[in-house]
Each structure stands twice: as structure tokens, then as C-alpha cells.
Length: 274
Image (tube, rainbow, N blue to C red; front, top):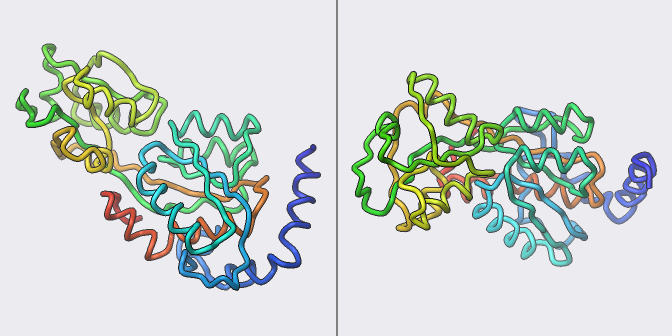
């Protein structure tokens, strides 16, 4: 099916029964973007008549919080389903531009979102919904006494980083450059969860990941904050995709993410407000 045909089919789908939902959603406006609404959340009544499956491609660091929000959305809107594909933002962006079917993209950096917008695969303007900051994950109890980013340059430590093309890896490199530090990791991992897993499995002594990932890991790792992370905070943008099949339902999920209810879940996971 051609992209034009898919767009035409989507236009047919969002008329009629979905019109009321679209009107309700369009009444809500964004304070910082021309994209989908911000105030409509999972608390909408059954009169919304939302239906269908929403496929969300999201940065690996969003796994825990988005999974929670997906369940909330499904409970609030019987007949809907939210499915996720989590991974490195660069890989997800490449999949989208390569034609992978998805309705929503939530990236861990504007740079990886730009891959999708430059390809013409986004609908509307992406909006930043949270920010995230780096933290050092150590073995439980921090037996190596890591206290700073500089400590990671110790050749006796096995340190892992995210790949430089992944937002968490690019942020780590930015922090290292700002500190004029050179670090040779034992491996570069495809996403932040893979880097964290190396520490959880004791295959590495430390990893530079996001604060949210250290938070999610609980007592499986220790966490060490470092001031240089303030120079490498990542903005997370979200957007509706051009070929979304259930546009009204996808917009409603984005609205939940950006609502006060969604922000409560995200900040509770350690994310920073946009």
C-alpha cells in the first residue's frame, strides 16, 4: 500500500465515530509545541469511544514508566491496546524511516528525533515531555569507591558506556569532553538498558547511564551523581507518526504522557520536567 493510500485510509478511519474524540482532544492546546494536546489523559470517560492498538516506539530508558502509562491508558479506555518497542533511539528512528509500522515515537534526544522529522515521517511538531540526566551505576555498595567521573578513568576498572550514536552515549561523551577526560570502556552497548545490565550481572564495575535507570534498578546497583552531568542533560521529544493507523487513540496516549497524571509517573521514575 502506498503512503498516500495509507493516509487516505487513516482519514476515513478518524471520521464518523472518532470525530468526537478528535474534537475533544483538539480543544486542549500545547504550551510549548504545535503537536498533540497536553491536558487530556487517561481519565477520559467511555464516551471518548477510542479503540484500536497503538504501537509506540520509545527509548529504552522509558520502559518502566511507559509500561505503567500504557496499562493506565488501557484501563481508562476499554477496547484499546498499547504495544511498545523499546530500544536505542537511533535504531528505532532507523526502523521508522525504513517503514516499520508505528504510531508514536518517543526519543531520548532531539538529534534522533530529527532523523524521523527530516524523513517526513512525523505528523506535527515533536514536543519535549521530559528531560533526563546521567548518573554512574556501580556495583551494589560501591566496592570500588567510585566518587567522580574522573574515577572511571582508572585502568583497573571495567567501565561500559552506551554507543556514541545512542543518546546516553552521546551525553556521556559530552560530559567527558567537558571535563577533558578520556575514558576507554571495555564495551559500548546498544542502549542504556544493555549498559546497566553489564553492571547488574557484575560483568562491569561501572556504567554511565541515566538517573532513571539507576532508580529503576533498585538495590541491584549503586548510584553516584557527578556535577558534569548537568552539562549533558537530554531532552525527550514525542510525536505522532505520519502513517499512524489509529490517530485519535495515538493522540490520546501522547496527551496522557504530557498530562499532569503522566508527568507524575515520569517524575516519580526520576525524569526531570521539560
